[in-house]
Amino acid sequence: MQRWKRSRSAGEGTGPDAEVEEHTDEELDVDPADEAGDVDEAGELGEVDEVGEVELVEEPDPAEPDVDLDPAAESDEDLEDLDDDVEELDEELDEDLDDELDELPEDGRPLLPSATDSRFGGGLLAVQLLQAAHAKQAITTALAMGLAAAVSGRPARETAVVLLTVLVGQTILGWHNDIVDRQRDQAHGLTGKPVAMGRISTETLWYALFVAALLLVPLAITTGIKAGCLYLASVAVGLLGNVVLRTGFFSWWSWAASYALLPAYLSFGGWGGQAEGNPPEPVILVLAALLGIGVHFMRAVWGLVADHEDGWTYLPLKLGLKLGATRLLALSTVYTAIIAILIAVMGAKVGLSK
Image (cartoon, rainbow, N blue to C red):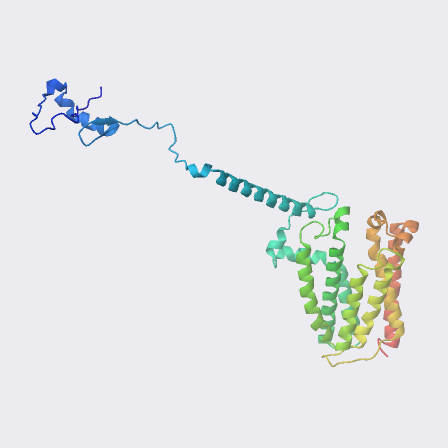
């Protein structure tokens, strides 16, 4: 039972002659024992005004959260701002989605995440770069050129520079080839191509190629400016061959030209930028060009199926359709070996240079 003290009215007991009414506990029906409890209860459930009257205050419902709503948040202006933010967010999401769709291959297969790009310089990325460089061809060509330099009587330091220069140049050619063929390799589902599989991005490979090119220039001219320019021209021809005339009958031209420049690089080479040797023997140039054609045929055999699907008409494909891939590979290998033997024989007979 709630109890509170009766307050005096505005005109009661306020006059100068008014008698002060004394009320006993019985008249107000107040239990003295509960007086203290009344005060506590009044403090919890109400507020006492200045004249002593207790005003009841409704207790908040604990089940309802105490939320202080800001009326301004529901204004039309705030709602318009909210709509604008939502529209901007939708536009950003649409743009991001369009960018992701543009990066998908034409056949709709998503690329694998380029996890190695975030670890540039790590061991895993080095493996991907090595695989994209066509490492077998690069190492074989570099060893052959180093051996040719040693047999021709070049000192060990020059032989080492020749080997390293050719290795860097062949690496650049391999990276460029994988960049150019990225979409084709994706379409044919080739598993040995890190760029096509999304293991390494084209931006990363272009960066590595640019760094390798900056290294190649001083390496090439270390054995002479003329010799270095000839080897840089050989690499440039190979890069051009990756994009020009590679699908038709004259696909072999870049291989023949780039390989023909290699004996000239050796014959004019020496030590230091001012070194200048002698011109190469013409027969060695011709044999080197024929060797390049043989290497082209051997390399082309492994992609004949994909090239035929893409409508290529180059010479290795035409011969492969008539002879079969296995027979073409065997003939190409024998041909290349014979040319290599002839180069060795003629080099021992007439020498590398005049």
